[in-house]
Length: 475
Image (cartoon, rainbow, N blue to C red; front, side, top):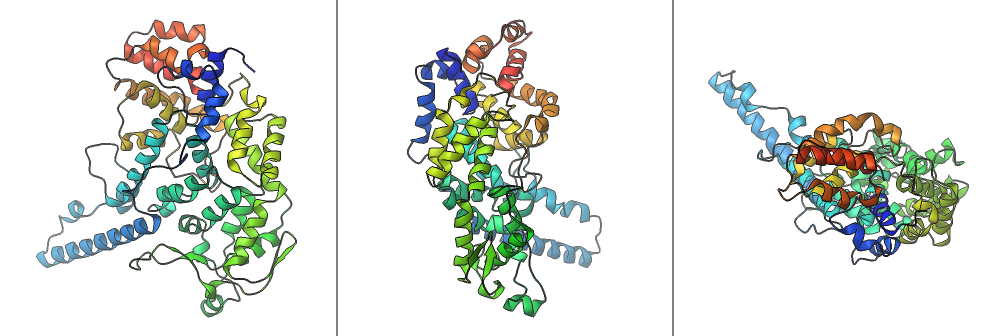
């Protein structure tokens, strides 16, 4: 573990946060560990001010109305064209709905559609919280859990951002059992992993509609969200658990006032007792599912799985086994208290190894660049930059989220040059590159990096080289 106070402070800001801002390395040098721990104790840590943002149900209803009005307008336009015998207007009066609804424009002057605006408004709150954070440790935890329990705007555009606010943020420093219950019953997750299509084969709806079980949500809860692979559960456990959570769905978004809200529908629920991981669960309706979730939240394999992922995310692709063991023990001893687990992460000496081998993913790197440079930014531009680097916001490639290892991101490093150049071209005129180097890296900067930046041909080039330096790319 490094003993130089400023080196340890710079390490703390990169490893546990989003990187330093002006004079911050010196400001926390007396007690870097204490500064990181203090981030956990801030009032309403992890929450965001979002009074103007709709809830998930409200957003889903707005999206439904937008699509309905759009469809009606297109039909009226088609009728008018037929009546007038005009066909040349077709290309001008229709457009690609999928593109318009899911791709926020990178041009800040272009007015986005309502669905794109829903996403951008949520994204702006997220970026504001990260860019404006003091240390950023709690925000990093929010991002970790959001990726662990990921959903995708490709499947549920209207709810993805609100899902993070509603299910992740309130519980990121709470108990894992409460976080698990919140995410698995959220309409965004139920839709993303197809539980809205699931019904018991012997349920009233299953019999009447000749339909049956969808096991996606049950399988991903066991494999990705809790126990992890090769933890001892069987296919029979997956099937039984899928039967347990039949009936977990939400009210249709076209229903006024309550569309998009979670609801348990008894007629979809598979009747009878189910056995999951050797435990028998009587048919108590929605409580049957809650009981299974509570038990797997406390399973030893869940503690091990979460400990391994947290250590890998913050410290190393192959984390120290001693660190994983400490996190595992705290998780079990504290009844899954995630704040206590986070404290253990910070207090462990293994977390402070001076070897900085973790490669920052595009999202964290972009936020670090903006924080350090004070570059002007627009939410659409940040989202476009993140997408161009292979990590589109709230659009993971699969239910296991974006990978968290160097192998995933290393080949994309050259592509960050364009983004770095773009940010460097928007610098405040007061920026002085060598001062920025001291603010952003301090003693972590190698002699080679200092020489390279000092010899840059322009201020913009110097800042670009700083943000692309190996010491800035890693945490």
